[in-house]
Image (cartoon, rainbow, N blue to C red; front, side):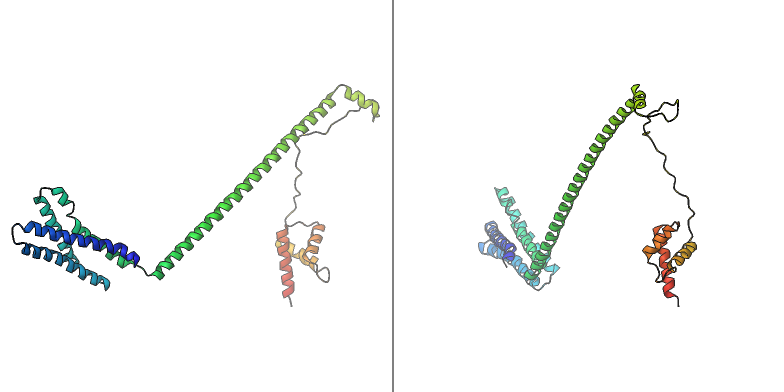
Length: 291
């Protein structure tokens, strides 16, 4: 009810002002050329028609209905009242002042139109409470989502910072270690290449072969050749099943997968863990379903 007064009160006030102003202008303007009683009747007729159409429109609106012809007649009365005010303003010396108030009838009609639109879109308190609850729930979920994202971003930032610092420390340690190893190796190489190294070693070691001069050889620090992998022929599924079957049934009760895997490797066979486990499952399934 309080919200309804926010739209109906301005419309009522504008309507009263417009009707009083229109009646006064008609009586003042036409009273000089005809009896004031007739001018009063003309003004009341203009205001009465405007008020009658407004009352009928309000009645239809209360019933949830609308009539286009009635609305057209109401706007026609409003435009007629505005036309009278404009004509009076043009005949007066202070034209601008009177033109400033000539829009009041149409303004009152527009305010009643706004109030009618508000009535057609008005909701019950229950619906408004439900809408407010839905909006509040949506705001709560959005706030929780934002907080979760901020927390995840902070955690990720902390993790990246820790990883970066740890990597930096590892790089510094590796650089220092490489520098120390390089210095130590340079010292050893200089000692090996020194002129007094052979004589010093000769004093403390015996000759292996007469006439041979012992020499102190340092291990070579450089690239190494990788050991090639053993090239063993891959077992087919049938061969793998046969070997697994022999191992599985070689003992009573049958071997578990762990024991079977150990014996399989100890026998010199090679197969990936995935293939060996798949073969063991096939063998055990076949053994379990056999009559």
